[in-house]
Length: 392
Ligand SMILES: Nc1ncnc2c1ncn2[C@@H]1O[C@H](COP(=O)(O)OP(=O)(O)OP(=O)(O)O)[C@@H](O)[C@H]1O
Ligand SMILES: [Mg+2]
Image 1 (cartoon, rainbow, N blue to C red):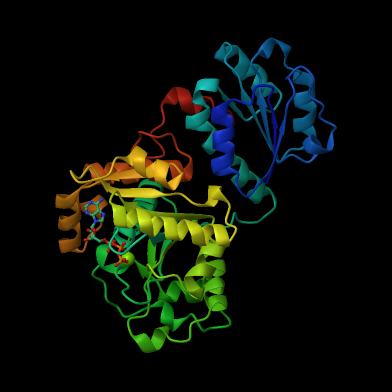
Image 2 (image 1 turned 180 degrees about the vertical axis):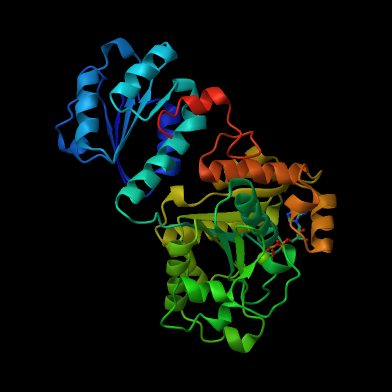
């Protein structure tokens, strides 16, 4: 998507949201005040999302905004301003602005504006937005990668009603499925991975339905089925999966091989999972070196600290300093609920919907879909907030 931003101040929150949610978009931030919106310049003329940061609404060039919206019916215009909302909303609606938010709401609401713009654009082109591929890799064995990725995927599907597929690419141990289901119907990735005619229906036939919107593609259960799988075949599965699901989660094993490298190449984001003890710090440093050698941009890597809060943990700030990166998410240690979930073979969200770890996973999914944080469901925004989205 082509995103153009008019902002003379470019607030920190605005840059952060653009970095997080428009990583693969073409973003143009123009250092201009909202009095003189040069809508004819190339950077603006083909914008599919136009964000106007307008500290002084009295000076906004409303006529220019209207003329842009008339010429570009499939693009989305969003206005950031702090003025008297009632008045601005009416005016904004008249000139075709779809979203109005305050500066203090950028972190909370702009991501969902971006996602809606993306969906509108795809709908206008008769296409589907390709699902995002999120890959989870242990920085060292036993960090909780399979448990966290499978439970996070389940929460995303349940709470946000997104179609989610979890692909278990841990061909050695294949434990992701045990964390969420006891269905052992025998269907696995091995049944379809060598098919040249792979499509959505065939993919479906190999998946186990675990929730209303959640499917699982198990790793092959025998070594013979795993032998000889090629990176191109992994690539093909991920391509078909991303065209048929909103989110494709990939659970990797700890050793890097050509299959896991291809999965990571194809991913929108990679989440290395570590714990706050020294061996994991070393493991993370090794992974970081690999990512650098592969020229992955830093914004693609999102480090996760799991099982935080144990007495022998190293302080998070110390680890961040050693690794020269900030944790994207910190998850609490929740031994009782994790054990109960594993022993029952049921997702954490079903066993302990109000548990500390479940809550942290819900918060994380809010960030993934761009929903306001500190809510338990996408639909639970306040009426006032919803009103600010003018045309949905
Ligand atoms: N936040 C947490 N609180 C408590 N226990 C946890 C937490 N996260 C994971 N665990 C437990 O850690 C154990 C190991 O988890 P898991 O199998 O997911 O690790 P892994 O990183 O995938 O390991 P492997 O290297 O074998 O693939 C599991 O028993 C799981 O219940
Ligand atoms: Mg694992």
